[in-house]
Image (cartoon, rainbow over all chains, first blue to last red; front, side, top):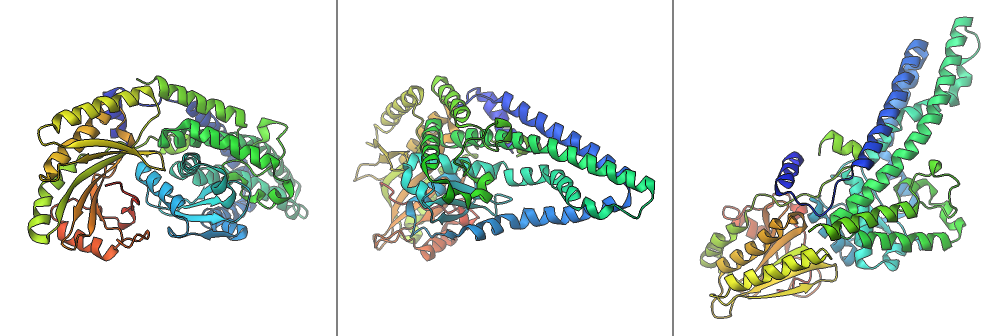
Length: 307
Length: 195
């Protein structure tokens, strides 16, 4: 279906926005590197033999749990409350229009009663989605800015970011699991077995370290993609840029004690719930504000010059 | 969305579905003759107005076209921006001669010139207003992305409530004539419709 639309677009020869080949290339490269690391890791596990199979099985169960329950657990721990159209008519109206525009069924709409301005969307698929905004962001932003933020969040859902990130992180969690339980493997075996275990632990360390950075990079690329997708959805890149400036400015002024409780949900938020700036971009799961603003500015100028 | 689109997070906004707008220009006959639902003489098209000079000039040209084509029947055109930043282009028949065909032709002229300009994905929906025998306002909404129609009957008491029972009746009555949206969760309400 989407292929057909692409062709029609090419035939008409004009779109409001250009392509973003650079971002896509970086994202594919990151995924390729992650896959490469994981393939080598699987190889090492196979060489090590029987004990590893159990670990893989345990990790698979954890993965399924994470996919199906993580959003519910996270939301239950955050005190998120579903709101009806009568309680929040404006929020519902904005989301409904975005759903028409993005051709999505309507998600569950929730509000979190905290003054910290933020928003997130969760759900494995288009059918089971929850969009949540905090009281703070509802009060801080204008309707157009709020729409930009919500479009960014809905784009995460459309792009299936929760699924992609969970699957991409599977072997990283597996490696972490092996490191945690490596004590239990040692002792009692013959010399050859001990060497195998040593090999697995070393491999796990390397896989964990490498995939940590790759996952962070992937997360940042997906943020850029969601910024872009959200801006294309609303046709107003500058509204999202202005929302990001407002939200970031406010978060940095809010005392960090209040924020620490929100740290668990950080990956889902539009702006990470951390007051201090990261030392290195490499460690950040969200790209720096300046880069996001620059990308949105490029989109706005593409939009303005398309004609 | 293909696997590659998921992996790279590349999402295109969907363009309009194959056009079934003109279904209304025959369906209204049944509405009038069998269900005593009269056209209210107005219709509107809702879209995201891009804040670019190119889009604004497309809109100006379009308004000229609609005024020219509507000239014979006396259809008037006006625009309005709602509080969510969406633009409504409203078409009104002269009071003595309501014509759903003219409105459908006018709405189609607007949507096709937006599509020709390469902004088809900005179209949200078209709304046609009717009144039933009790003078209650009934809207038929056409979703461009889906190519489906659905009825929307706001509660006349003013609260943001919709008369779902009436809407479902209308679906049963008109299902054969209008291609109705099969998924009820996509019957999105539009509050504060300016027609």
